Length: 232
Image (cartoon, rainbow, N blue to C red; front, side):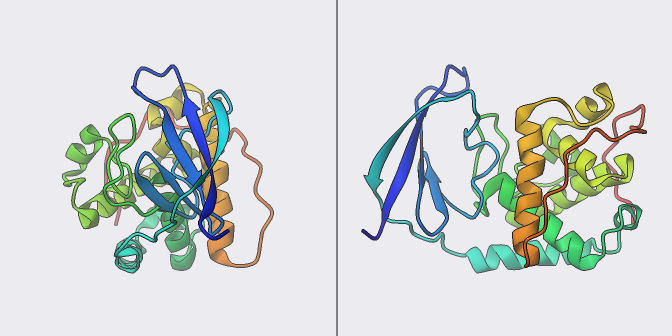
């Protein structure tokens, strides 16, 4: 039956959640949790960890595409294009097309293109910027264009510092101090799943399936976490 989906009711003991989150997946790849509707990969904070106690129920809900999605994709592409000359990209062998795909994959993993998405920890918008990070970057996270610009600059700062895509993604997800602390990718399931998710999205966006890279601990991690900088 059209519109029939499988909904996960996740009940956790986390203090950041006062009630169960409902995550519903449609046949077209959409997902909805606590009122949000997602397209593509559910965002990283959607609560799909192995540790969550979950029960599966069936529901019949309409999977409605969010309005303005084409506009969001155009904003993502324009933001990536604006930063395609950043020398951090050359340090990790990303050309303009590969950078655009990586950035779009990050946005999909973070918010599934929802400009008003708010995580349980308070991260906001398309790039899921924390309030302190947004302030440091000088952007208004409620403005989709500024949110994306801040997300791109923050990711580029991690690429410039760690000179490794996986380490940069780990820093974006868990914080650069964690990458420095563990001299590599932190041993957090959430972070490793996040990196694998972004590579999976990259493969899908790039076209023909590619084998997912191993998530490994890189050597030569800098001794300090990066400052928020723009390298043009």
